[in-house]
Amino acid sequence: MNKIIYAAMALFIIVGCSSKPIVTPALKNAQNAYESIRNDPSISQSAPLALFQAEKIYDLSLKVKDKKEADHAAYLLDREVEVAKQSARKQHLKNQIEKLKSAKQKALLDQKETQLLLLKKEMKQAKEKLKELQELNAKQTNRGLVLTLGDVLFESSKANLLPGSKRAIDKLVEFLNDNPQRKVLIEGHTDNVGSATYNIDLSLRRAQSVKDALVAQGIDENRVTALGYGEMYPVAPNSDAAGRQRNRRVEIVILEKGVDPENMHR
Image (tube, rainbow, N blue to C red):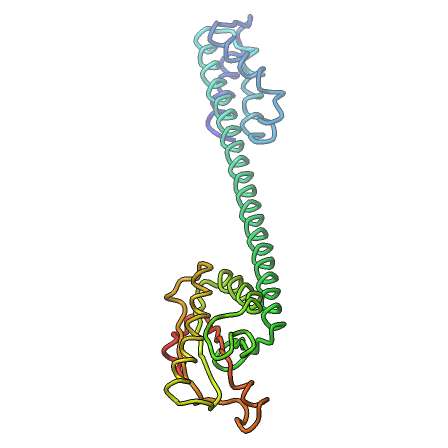
Protein backbone atom coordinates (compact mmCIF):
# COMPACT_ATOMS: atom_id res chain seq x y z
CA MET A 1 0.00 0.00 0.00
CA ASN A 2 1.62 3.28 -1.09
CA LYS A 3 1.82 6.73 0.46
CA ILE A 4 -1.29 7.96 -1.33
CA ILE A 5 -3.42 5.20 0.17
CA TYR A 6 -2.01 5.99 3.63
CA ALA A 7 -2.83 9.63 3.11
CA ALA A 8 -6.35 8.74 2.02
CA MET A 9 -6.87 6.53 5.09
CA ALA A 10 -5.64 9.31 7.34
CA LEU A 11 -8.06 11.60 5.60
CA PHE A 12 -10.92 9.20 6.28
CA ILE A 13 -9.98 8.96 9.95
CA ILE A 14 -9.86 12.73 10.28
CA VAL A 15 -13.17 13.37 8.59
CA GLY A 16 -14.94 10.36 9.99
CA CYS A 17 -16.11 12.26 13.04
CA SER A 18 -17.67 15.09 11.04
CA SER A 19 -21.38 15.06 10.44
CA LYS A 20 -22.06 16.37 6.92
CA PRO A 21 -20.18 15.54 3.63
CA ILE A 22 -18.84 18.51 1.65
CA VAL A 23 -17.93 18.88 -2.01
CA THR A 24 -15.65 21.67 -3.17
CA PRO A 25 -15.23 22.65 -6.87
CA ALA A 26 -11.75 21.07 -6.86
CA LEU A 27 -13.05 17.84 -5.37
CA LYS A 28 -15.95 17.73 -7.82
CA ASN A 29 -13.55 18.13 -10.74
CA ALA A 30 -11.34 15.36 -9.38
CA GLN A 31 -14.32 13.06 -8.91
CA ASN A 32 -15.53 13.79 -12.44
CA ALA A 33 -12.04 13.02 -13.76
CA TYR A 34 -12.06 9.65 -12.02
CA GLU A 35 -15.57 8.85 -13.24
CA SER A 36 -14.46 9.57 -16.80
CA ILE A 37 -11.74 6.90 -16.69
CA ARG A 38 -13.05 4.19 -14.38
CA ASN A 39 -14.85 2.35 -17.19
CA ASP A 40 -12.16 2.96 -19.80
CA PRO A 41 -10.92 -0.53 -20.84
CA SER A 42 -7.59 0.82 -22.06
CA ILE A 43 -6.85 2.18 -18.57
CA SER A 44 -8.23 -0.82 -16.68
CA GLN A 45 -5.97 -3.08 -18.78
CA SER A 46 -2.89 -0.87 -18.78
CA ALA A 47 -2.98 0.58 -15.25
CA PRO A 48 -5.14 -1.65 -13.02
CA LEU A 49 -3.22 -0.81 -9.82
CA ALA A 50 -3.45 2.96 -10.31
CA LEU A 51 -7.14 2.65 -11.13
CA PHE A 52 -7.70 0.55 -8.00
CA GLN A 53 -5.99 3.15 -5.81
CA ALA A 54 -7.95 5.95 -7.47
CA GLU A 55 -11.16 4.06 -6.74
CA LYS A 56 -10.33 3.82 -3.02
CA ILE A 57 -9.54 7.52 -2.82
CA TYR A 58 -12.72 8.33 -4.73
CA ASP A 59 -14.81 6.33 -2.28
CA LEU A 60 -13.22 8.17 0.66
CA SER A 61 -13.69 11.53 -1.07
CA LEU A 62 -17.44 11.03 -1.04
CA LYS A 63 -17.38 11.13 2.76
CA VAL A 64 -15.20 14.17 3.51
CA LYS A 65 -16.94 16.84 5.64
CA ASP A 66 -14.31 19.56 5.82
CA LYS A 67 -13.22 21.97 3.07
CA LYS A 68 -9.53 21.61 3.80
CA GLU A 69 -9.71 17.85 3.70
CA ALA A 70 -11.96 18.00 0.62
CA ASP A 71 -9.23 19.91 -1.21
CA HIS A 72 -6.64 17.41 0.02
CA ALA A 73 -8.79 14.54 -1.25
CA ALA A 74 -9.10 16.32 -4.60
CA TYR A 75 -5.31 16.63 -4.81
CA LEU A 76 -4.81 12.91 -4.03
CA LEU A 77 -7.50 11.82 -6.47
CA ASP A 78 -6.18 14.08 -9.24
CA ARG A 79 -2.68 12.64 -8.79
CA GLU A 80 -3.84 9.03 -8.94
CA VAL A 81 -6.08 9.66 -11.96
CA GLU A 82 -3.13 11.27 -13.74
CA VAL A 83 -0.91 8.30 -12.85
CA ALA A 84 -3.51 5.96 -14.35
CA LYS A 85 -3.72 8.07 -17.53
CA GLN A 86 0.06 8.29 -17.88
CA SER A 87 0.40 4.53 -17.40
CA ALA A 88 -2.21 3.94 -20.09
CA ARG A 89 -0.44 6.35 -22.47
CA LYS A 90 2.88 4.65 -21.83
CA GLN A 91 1.41 1.22 -22.53
CA HIS A 92 -0.30 2.54 -25.66
CA LEU A 93 3.03 3.86 -26.95
CA LYS A 94 4.69 0.52 -26.19
CA ASN A 95 1.96 -1.26 -28.12
CA GLN A 96 2.39 1.10 -31.06
CA ILE A 97 6.15 0.54 -31.04
CA GLU A 98 5.65 -3.23 -31.03
CA LYS A 99 3.21 -2.95 -33.92
CA LEU A 100 5.69 -0.80 -35.84
CA LYS A 101 8.44 -3.30 -35.14
CA SER A 102 6.23 -6.13 -36.35
CA ALA A 103 5.28 -4.14 -39.43
CA LYS A 104 8.93 -3.33 -40.10
CA GLN A 105 9.94 -6.98 -39.67
CA LYS A 106 7.15 -8.02 -42.01
CA ALA A 107 8.24 -5.39 -44.53
CA LEU A 108 11.84 -6.63 -44.30
CA LEU A 109 10.64 -10.22 -44.68
CA ASP A 110 8.54 -9.26 -47.69
CA GLN A 111 11.57 -7.45 -49.13
CA LYS A 112 13.77 -10.52 -48.63
CA GLU A 113 11.15 -12.75 -50.23
CA THR A 114 10.88 -10.36 -53.18
CA GLN A 115 14.66 -10.33 -53.56
CA LEU A 116 14.75 -14.12 -53.39
CA LEU A 117 12.05 -14.44 -56.04
CA LEU A 118 13.90 -11.93 -58.23
CA LEU A 119 17.16 -13.83 -57.74
CA LYS A 120 15.47 -17.12 -58.65
CA LYS A 121 14.01 -15.47 -61.73
CA GLU A 122 17.42 -14.07 -62.74
CA MET A 123 19.05 -17.47 -62.15
CA LYS A 124 16.40 -19.15 -64.26
CA GLN A 125 16.90 -16.63 -67.05
CA ALA A 126 20.69 -17.08 -66.85
CA LYS A 127 20.29 -20.84 -67.09
CA GLU A 128 18.03 -20.43 -70.10
CA LYS A 129 20.56 -18.16 -71.80
CA LEU A 130 23.34 -20.62 -70.98
CA LYS A 131 21.24 -23.47 -72.36
CA GLU A 132 20.71 -21.50 -75.57
CA LEU A 133 24.47 -21.07 -75.93
CA GLN A 134 25.02 -24.74 -75.24
CA GLU A 135 22.54 -25.53 -78.00
CA LEU A 136 24.98 -23.65 -80.26
CA ASN A 137 27.58 -26.26 -79.21
CA ALA A 138 29.17 -24.07 -76.56
CA LYS A 139 31.24 -26.16 -74.15
CA GLN A 140 32.44 -25.55 -70.61
CA THR A 141 36.24 -25.77 -70.34
CA ASN A 142 38.88 -24.84 -67.79
CA ARG A 143 39.29 -21.54 -69.66
CA GLY A 144 35.59 -20.72 -69.57
CA LEU A 145 32.57 -21.31 -71.79
CA VAL A 146 33.75 -21.79 -75.39
CA LEU A 147 31.52 -21.16 -78.41
CA THR A 148 32.96 -22.16 -81.78
CA LEU A 149 32.06 -20.44 -85.06
CA GLY A 150 32.99 -22.68 -87.95
CA ASP A 151 34.49 -21.77 -91.31
CA VAL A 152 31.05 -21.98 -92.96
CA LEU A 153 30.03 -18.74 -91.17
CA PHE A 154 32.64 -16.72 -93.08
CA GLU A 155 33.10 -15.95 -96.73
CA SER A 156 35.65 -18.31 -98.26
CA SER A 157 39.19 -17.12 -97.47
CA LYS A 158 37.76 -13.86 -96.14
CA ALA A 159 36.89 -12.37 -92.75
CA ASN A 160 33.34 -11.22 -93.50
CA LEU A 161 30.67 -12.87 -91.36
CA LEU A 162 27.82 -14.51 -93.28
CA PRO A 163 24.12 -14.07 -92.29
CA GLY A 164 24.15 -17.57 -90.80
CA SER A 165 26.27 -16.26 -87.91
CA LYS A 166 23.57 -13.82 -86.73
CA ARG A 167 21.79 -16.25 -84.41
CA ALA A 168 24.99 -17.16 -82.58
CA ILE A 169 26.05 -13.51 -82.30
CA ASP A 170 22.61 -12.47 -81.00
CA LYS A 171 22.57 -15.19 -78.34
CA LEU A 172 26.08 -14.25 -77.30
CA VAL A 173 25.09 -10.57 -76.98
CA GLU A 174 22.10 -11.50 -74.80
CA PHE A 175 24.30 -13.59 -72.53
CA LEU A 176 26.91 -10.84 -72.19
CA ASN A 177 24.24 -8.24 -71.43
CA ASP A 178 22.93 -10.47 -68.64
CA ASN A 179 26.47 -11.02 -67.33
CA PRO A 180 28.13 -7.58 -67.52
CA GLN A 181 31.13 -8.60 -65.40
CA ARG A 182 32.26 -11.35 -67.75
CA LYS A 183 34.73 -10.63 -70.54
CA VAL A 184 35.32 -12.37 -73.88
CA LEU A 185 38.42 -13.69 -75.57
CA ILE A 186 37.98 -14.24 -79.33
CA GLU A 187 40.58 -16.45 -81.02
CA GLY A 188 40.87 -16.95 -84.77
CA HIS A 189 42.35 -20.21 -86.19
CA THR A 190 43.09 -21.54 -89.70
CA ASP A 191 44.30 -24.69 -91.41
CA ASN A 192 47.87 -24.99 -92.75
CA VAL A 193 47.07 -24.07 -96.34
CA GLY A 194 48.90 -20.89 -97.36
CA SER A 195 51.75 -19.09 -95.65
CA ALA A 196 51.97 -18.71 -91.88
CA THR A 197 51.84 -14.92 -92.26
CA TYR A 198 48.68 -15.06 -94.36
CA ASN A 199 47.01 -17.44 -91.93
CA ILE A 200 47.85 -15.27 -88.90
CA ASP A 201 46.40 -12.26 -90.69
CA LEU A 202 43.22 -14.09 -91.78
CA SER A 203 42.61 -15.55 -88.32
CA LEU A 204 43.06 -12.15 -86.68
CA ARG A 205 40.72 -10.43 -89.15
CA ARG A 206 38.05 -13.08 -88.55
CA ALA A 207 38.37 -12.69 -84.78
CA GLN A 208 38.14 -8.92 -85.21
CA SER A 209 34.99 -9.32 -87.32
CA VAL A 210 33.31 -11.17 -84.47
CA LYS A 211 34.42 -8.48 -82.00
CA ASP A 212 33.08 -5.77 -84.31
CA ALA A 213 29.72 -7.58 -84.50
CA LEU A 214 29.49 -7.68 -80.68
CA VAL A 215 30.49 -4.03 -80.27
CA ALA A 216 27.97 -3.02 -82.96
CA GLN A 217 25.24 -4.47 -80.71
CA GLY A 218 26.33 -2.49 -77.68
CA ILE A 219 28.96 -4.66 -76.00
CA ASP A 220 31.77 -2.54 -74.53
CA GLU A 221 34.87 -3.07 -76.67
CA ASN A 222 36.99 -3.15 -73.51
CA ARG A 223 35.29 -6.41 -72.59
CA VAL A 224 36.32 -8.09 -75.85
CA THR A 225 39.84 -9.14 -76.89
CA ALA A 226 40.51 -10.44 -80.43
CA LEU A 227 43.57 -12.59 -81.24
CA GLY A 228 44.74 -14.49 -84.31
CA TYR A 229 46.75 -17.72 -84.00
CA GLY A 230 46.73 -18.87 -87.61
CA GLU A 231 47.53 -22.58 -87.94
CA MET A 232 49.28 -22.98 -84.55
CA TYR A 233 46.48 -24.75 -82.67
CA PRO A 234 44.72 -27.32 -84.88
CA VAL A 235 41.94 -29.46 -83.43
CA ALA A 236 42.17 -32.04 -86.21
CA PRO A 237 44.78 -33.29 -88.72
CA ASN A 238 45.30 -31.04 -91.74
CA SER A 239 45.85 -34.09 -93.94
CA ASP A 240 42.27 -34.18 -95.25
CA ALA A 241 39.54 -31.72 -96.18
CA ALA A 242 37.34 -32.55 -93.18
CA GLY A 243 40.18 -31.94 -90.74
CA ARG A 244 41.17 -28.68 -92.40
CA GLN A 245 37.56 -27.44 -92.24
CA ARG A 246 37.43 -28.12 -88.49
CA ASN A 247 40.64 -26.16 -88.00
CA ARG A 248 39.24 -23.11 -89.79
CA ARG A 249 37.30 -21.65 -86.88
CA VAL A 250 36.84 -18.80 -84.42
CA GLU A 251 36.65 -19.75 -80.75
CA ILE A 252 34.78 -17.37 -78.46
CA VAL A 253 35.88 -17.90 -74.86
CA ILE A 254 33.44 -16.41 -72.33
CA LEU A 255 35.66 -15.95 -69.31
CA GLU A 256 34.54 -16.45 -65.74
CA LYS A 257 33.64 -13.39 -63.65
CA GLY A 258 36.75 -11.41 -62.68
CA VAL A 259 39.13 -13.27 -65.04
CA ASP A 260 41.45 -11.02 -67.08
CA PRO A 261 41.76 -12.02 -70.80
CA GLU A 262 45.55 -11.51 -70.67
CA ASN A 263 45.78 -14.32 -68.13
CA MET A 264 44.01 -16.70 -70.48
CA HIS A 265 46.07 -16.21 -73.64
CA ARG A 266 47.47 -19.37 -75.13
